[in-house]
Length: 227
Image 1: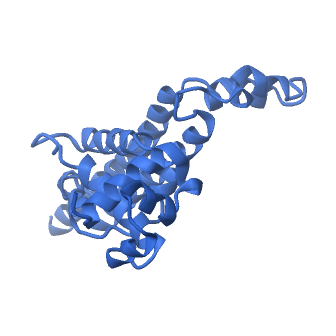
Image 2: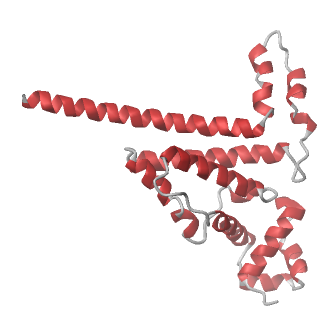
Image 3: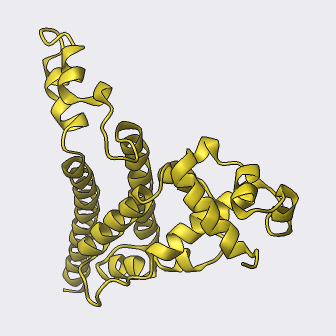
């Protein structure tokens, strides 16, 4: 098997699932490929370049599915959020790997064009369209970062993050709301994730409604002035 960038990256991703990000080293990757570590430097100057390419490969694999045409912007955002979450969860330490890495080609970046178009067509200016997209991405990465700390790659939940265990540590007489919130913090993670996405969408919806109202008011004032 020829040693090229794609082979190195795919091997590194498989090794990530076994070793985790902290255990991933160029030496271990080289051993898995049955080569000496210096051979990897023909393709990547350092480990960070390899991590960037690994994250880009994950993103490139995940964006092959395009959203249906004429889909409401709300559905666009939900599809993006769910797709990003599943991509990050598909790899051990996926959120840690992906956060802050540099995309080495444009395809994962330009995949966001339909979302921006749907938002702009709905009345958002480009600044706010980018803002809600970035906010959503940061939310998903942060959520999965916490999720992967609570649930192991095997699917087993750390008992320390059980809702009842959290509640038992809190003085319910003095902090009743905090104690009762345990169910929403560490309970159904799928529901918690969807709730957060809906809050972001609701905020954007309010912004669009306010913009439409201001635009209508301005039009009415111009007509009144002409009269």
